[in-house]
Image 1 (tube, rainbow, N blue to C red):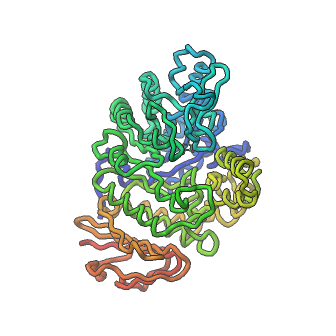
Image 2 (cartoon, protein in one colour):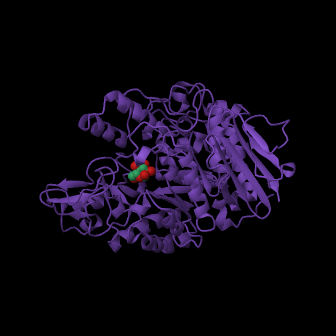
Image 3 (cartoon, rainbow, N blue to C red):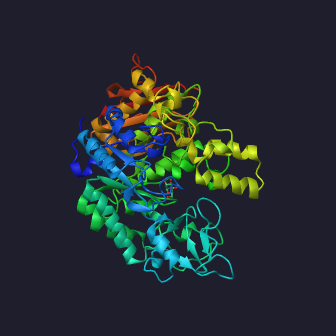
Length: 560
Ligand code: GLC
């Protein structure tokens, strides 16, 4: 049952662990995580079995958006450590067979970057054209594009009398990719890290880099249709891939905002011309009614299954996707789609199995492997995230949403839900730091922490360890086709993966009551075996008629 993988495609059977350094582990008492903290936890990650770490930005930054606002691409933020610390991390990770993937943020820079500072100081600076400047139109912003963090995407500079574009915070100015010098700078930045021995790159909001050059106002939306998967994006990616990624053999994953399947087939087309794989977020919009994030809403289960079906069948044989529920921008999945109280352990395992048995490369976000939950903050003072505080201001102070309603929305939707400090043990501050953390630790840390999980054979941690292992042992997980077995079932998400030699079925009950389904006739139950489940199945033979307990997951495999 062992798959032989060509090393160039190591990432097809790999599982990748995402670290948000600010919240991972503080080696001292600053209250913010650092690189030495990460090094001290490499053995923990080795035990989990992951193949690579995706490290979110550790570069020099004023930290308005926690590092996604880079002011120097060639320096490590001293809050996280030094370049020597980084080199040590790279070498200690490599010694353990763990690869390192760096986050590259090149849609924008911090406004504190010397390029922007020079552009701001002098309209004739060669750096002026590194950014996107426009004259006012009728005394107003050049168009009605909205920032992803709320408000206009244009900021006025009184000195030059022009506006500059920022699709995110006003301290994150968009780079002008039309300028070939900008593209040359980007190639140099990425080559610098590849030369150091970094194994790959995660490219932040990379499908937003090419803007429609007439910058039209959007009479039906917020402007995104004029810069998402924009006119020259594929050309730009091919240019960088040829110059850097292919040269260094880097694995790459692009973060694709509001993208389409057709574009993703091209970004990740298996000939490696652009990227190795893509993140898309459509499945995480199952709790955004009519696309609206800032509401309190249950998730639409049938829609969730439809979206997975669309992407799993659409990418098979054409491209490669990242599989994930959690990251530093998303609430904790066990609170979002599972039950973080009575069935926390069962639902955390079930949700893990649901995505890990699909085709693609799974990403595990720190703390997901121990079933960490949203913290349930009750006050606006507990929040730090720029998007959350902006939205509070806009919705409460400008749109009249009540304070209580907004607190309830943030408790469900805020990005800080996943950014709370990693829960290492039951000591003060969850063992994350010796000093007071920058963001409050979730109160449940005495029960939910890594030390407890590692000491308990039946924990979420060991279930994830099994999921990671299965991907390496069972070929059909990597290669098989995808079929949604019960698209209309109101509780069970069950799908089949099939290759020439194997069939796998993954059954998942998404709710707290028993649910039933019948396996396909052609699935030969006598030959099948359970390879993993989150309830005891010892006495069970595989039967056609399946009864799943609350949040139960069962993975069955048969050799054809
Ligand atoms: C990506 C990052 C997010 C950041 C944004 C702007 O979506 O994941 O954290 O705020 O890009 O860089």
